Figure 1 (cartoon, one colour):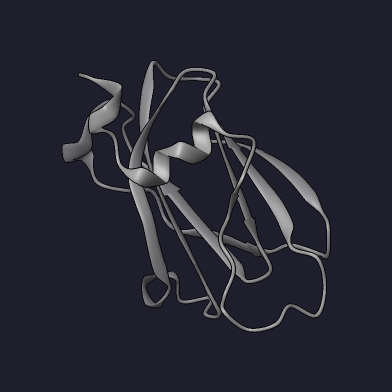
Figure 2 (cartoon, one colour):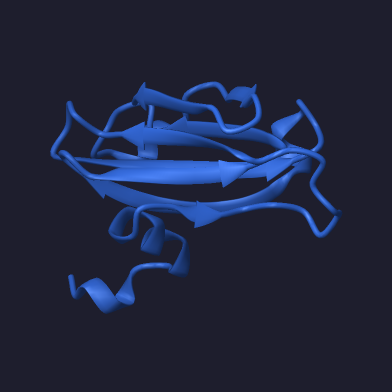
Length: 113
């Protein structure tokens, strides 16, 4: 598969970070959530960012595929939600449950999928 066919959201894998913030004036610096695939040849990941802990209500970024040792840096001052394939490499297996966090100002958190 040609790399140019990947979704725009995957550019976060290729760049140090992607800024996902709301249009409101931030009161603090956003935090960074680093999602890493260190286990599987490839895994599909979905990220949602917004004000709600009900992740399905937030704006979707992805899904996209991370190959082994690739990462996705999500920078936000809102709630960040993420999930992955339940069976990495098999999209028909469904998704894991959503995980979510609101990062502290300027926090960098490293998460292995």
